[in-house]
Image 1 (cartoon, rainbow, N blue to C red):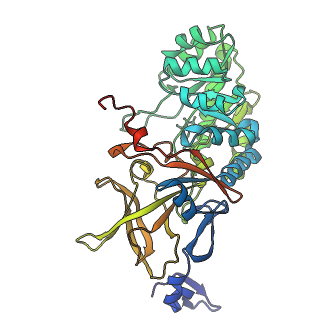
Image 2: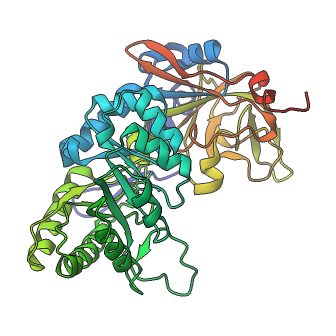
Image 3: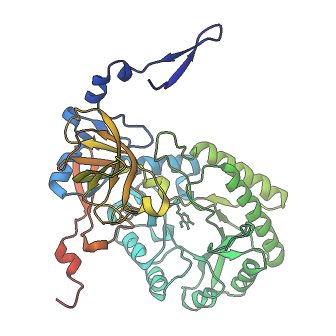
Length: 457
Ligand SMILES: Cc1ncc(COP(=O)(O)O)c(C=O)c1O
């Protein structure tokens, strides 16, 4: 018997408390898997007969209509996260970083909730424009911007451009509309001990960031509005961001003395952690916002500056939880070591985050009631690659078999956005669910789409 809980009795003696499913193992087989709040979309609910519903829509029905794999996104969850950010920071001070997940309708939701957008390419800028975004709220960023990125951004009238290398300043000054607002992406922290520092931005150490500010100050066509940074991903420790504010304020104060530039804005980036598993911790937003504002006021005051606006640009934390991928099981096998492998009809072509970022998702059987007791399973993809693992340590009913459907949680960020045609597979549809309706935002690719660019045909 596994001791899940230890209850203390008066007098100090401990007693092992059995869970209901341990007392009655057959009950375990007839209960649907628990949907942990914070891991599954806010609207995820079990219906009858193992029917998992998101946004009031059966995932089995989505699979039947749009095929599998299917990326499902809960509109209420995305909008709710946008509202959480707006409540914590003020909508005007939050820009969603679209690289996590972007389509024209996703951009419309973000705009409707009053947030801005960090766009990292000509494509993302065009999506914002097609969504009817207020382009003054769009920020073009990127460590290596192409001429097309810049030209598209200027033509669309993006409000701000982030300068991320010394070499691009003259190019931006020569091509941008007069008075273009810019931020400087600063690398303020120390170089990592002993390793190569391959982060992007302008280093404070060695004077690169100061040189960039001097060059921008000498360009009458550019207006330096402040500083920007990105310190990492999946972070939930406030202290890392506090340190960054201290460093950015010290640098901003130095630039103010040198060039008389009054920083209007400090963008603290994104990188906010989300929980992929029940035991994981996301970033506590309200407390984070209050603390960061306090630290910024204090630090600016220490340097005798008015506090700049504090802005954030989260990507993953806005959309990760809203996404669920629905797969169909194609094969179930055992390894010589006895591990159960459940192979699905997708994998690293639509779930690159597991291989690249180590995100560990949760999976459940959907579309029928699992009658058998759950046990460990490795959910693998179809790509004949040892790294092609969707969920390394799932708990699935013993009778999972080909034809079953699995739903994998937490796939809203960096899944649709990073999906590829690896193995010449067609990419899945992106389907929004809300108020009992499913709607394809991006249609499923056909094999003809995939082969259309092959000029050998
Ligand atoms: C300024 C900035 N904000 C946010 C992000 C997105 O990070 P995350 O999705 O971890 O929030 C990036 C990503 O590179 C970034 O450069």
